Image (cartoon, rainbow, N blue to C red):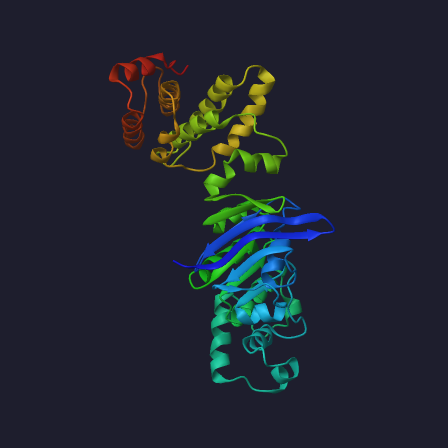
Amino acid sequence: MTNILEINNLTVSFDGFKALDALTFSMEEGELRTIIGPNGAGKTTFLDVITGKTQPTQGKVSFKGRNLRGLSEHQVSRRGIGRKFQTPRVYLNLTVRENLDLACNRNKNVFQTLLGKPSKSDRRTVVGLLETVGLTVKADFLANLLSHGEKQRLEIGMLVAQSPDLLLVDEPVAGLTDEETENVGALLLDLAASHSIIVIEHDMEFVRQIARKVTVLHQGSVLCEGTMDEVQNDPHVIEVYLGEAPSIGDRELKIIRIVAAMAWCDGNLAPEEEEVILSRLSRQFATDSQQQEELQEELKNYLAQDVAIANLIPELKSTEERELVLKLSYEVISSSSRTPNEPNINQQETAAYEQLVQLLDLPPEVVRRLEAEVEPRA
């Protein structure tokens, strides 16, 4: 699939301060990309340069193979890029239908919209947009009577009405209720079936709802890219968001992720399994009680998502790591036993454990020894 947007070595300087610093980025046509990053990471400047609001100090922005450098905002919009700002920009004294009708024909002004008759084609388009954004029943309401979330959806509908090839959506759920946030997320996922979309957002729960591929910006550059699981478990991302390096290293993180994946293998993280992971691993990787308590809090961040075990085993480099993973995994899935010394492992856990043993490729006598070392649950 071809790239719809390519950015190479992009730098934007304001009086010596680099808002963007040699940033390189690309996305494929039809992709939904979410961009996150702490305040000051360069997210707004990133959108400003794409839309022509800010001209780069150096570098190149190509949209559908054509260089955008030097074009005005109006010219960029005409090329097929639409932008939704954080604060809804709708005509509050027009109805929802009139807002969408005005957006359908950019050659039409407000006076023509109010006094003229829309074409049959425009009427069909507006009916479809009302259904898409979930505002059919409020089509004849004035926009100033809508909730904040409804205004956000209306503006997204107005953006879609202009038929852009690329939608740029800036913090669409800021200040929304949980229900409104879910509605906006569902709308963007529906639109992603037929549009290329970039979403900038701070709300991590919302990002998890819509994320397919996530790009993290930091100090004007791309820090990392990947799935939500990959990004949220990246030590550099954790350091950026928490302001400090994680207390566990890459080696420990690999082991934790595999053990957590074993706990999730039956689609459920039992309280006993969570307790074993938190208490056992904190003792394994921390020395004093205060460090263990701090590490337990940190480990909770790694227990929220299921991860495929087969993708993680190749990251283990030593026999010691493989043995530790096996022992801890066996302890975790045995933790919900009904009685001591009688592991109550269900079929899914049995299958996952057998797969783990096979992937770890440890001698049978080693496997038996490690299982025997696991202390029975009291």
